[in-house]
Length: 345
Ligand code: XIL
Image (cartoon, rainbow, N blue to C red; front, top):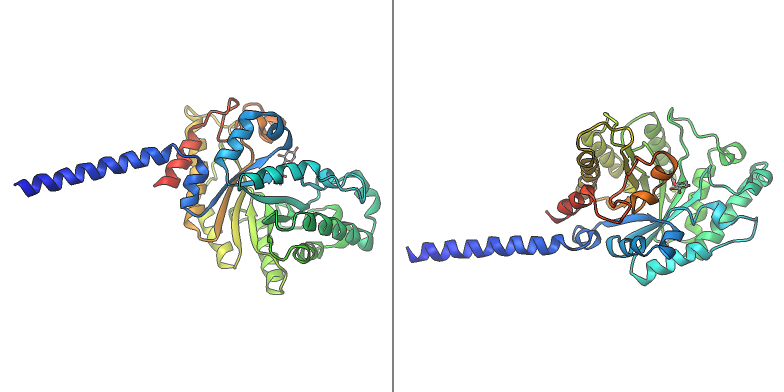
């Protein structure tokens, strides 16, 4: 009889300790919980709020273990005039990340957008365009060598129908601008992890099939492509959302030998008619994190911004977008709590 009471007593104490421990852990920031799961949890970072807005900075530093400069490393920011590199803002972000032990993902070396005007005048044929691209990549990647761990080398190269997007790089150089960019990046920093990054590639469709086939062929030929970034700009109202389809895609990319990363996740709300939008949003954020945690090749889950008011969706699409983990006051939303629960249990 006595023995039974002792066992029951021990069990009660063990459960109480577990709950207490869980509650304690629950108060820890995202990045501390994510560390136990061996995954980086990140946000895109803008220069201005990082330097001017204490609430933004506090969340950036305490909650996230990887940062992606949101605009400061795009070509128009880094090389506004040919040959004149402006590293100041990106350097400030990188230095602050370093100071706090935060990893940096570089974004992005080659894209058809955010180009300085001079590129359109000076990249007139294959030779001139290759020279411009090579110089840009070499300067930027060697400047950040050892400081930027992963690069989105090429961004958004395919159309929805699986053809290559009509960018200045495709028009002048042709499809080989993609493998060349990876090669040049690798030469400038052989240690960095190199990614191809795009949106709507997280499920099978014409675009992602064309992308996977081309990246796989190039990789087999020895092009240094380490991973595939899935931006994951999601619409909470999109009825096609399917965790099963996303999980299958993560597995396919991993089986083809690629690392995978969630690089720009947000879940916009402006099109959703629901009694509980916060719940729908939280579920989408959470399902994608669960899939990343289940996939050994997924080591990064990055959200595209910190506070709802400093989001490209809220600012460029609709004030009703509110697609992030923290509201405009910097208060955590349902999605934030849900991610923590998933990281914890
Ligand atoms: C967006 C930024 O969030 C905005 O501040 C900027 O005005 C335009 O670019 N895909 C990408 C990102 O790869 O670089 C884009 O970022 C969002 C879509």
